[in-house]
Each structure stands twice: as C-alpha cells, then as structure tokens.
Picture 1 (cartoon, one colour):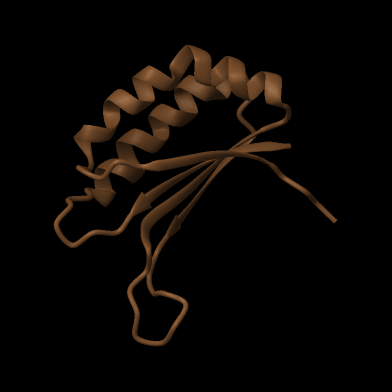
Picture 2 (picture 1 turned 180 degrees about the horizontal axis):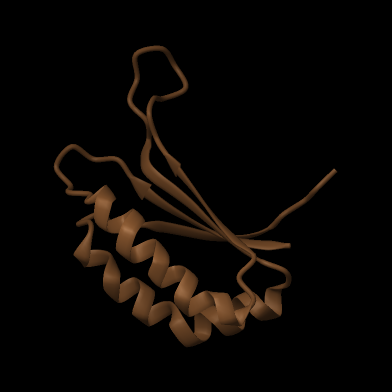
Length: 105
C-alpha cells in the first residue's frame, strides 16, 4: 500500500477553516480520487506537541491511501492541480507532502 501524507504546519498567523476542509475539501478528495483507486483517507487534528505544554506542530495531517504506486501516480497526475487549487479556500498554509510505502508487520 502507498500513501500521500499531507501535513499542514500549525502557525498562529495562518488561517485554517476546519469546517471547509472536512465538509468540502475531503469529499472532493473522495470524489476525484475514489474512481482512481483510493482506498481510504485518514485525517488527524493536532492537539498537542510531544512535550507537555507544547503546541502541535501540525494543524492537520492527512493520509491518502492507494493499493499501489501506479494508482497513486495516475490519480495525482489527473487530479493534483484540482486538489491543490482548492487549498486557498480553506487555508493560507503551504502544506508539506510526502509519498510513502506503508509497511505492515
């Protein structure tokens, strides 16, 4: 299994509309990527840092899962610009992204 991880760094000066992200952007992800082999989407909301009393490093961490690299590459090749183009509708944050192979043991 392969995963695109999208991390939205937490910054007090940036705006993040969680309602739009959950109720508009995430359904868009499902609508566009579902027919391309999307297995699931996992969303984590940062609530605290690793040390007591510290803030979370990220507002949201999103995992977008595909069965194989070919499906992931095809889906992103077709729809990345639409998904990236929607980001300014819910945040001023520039997300960080990484593609990973999910190891299960």
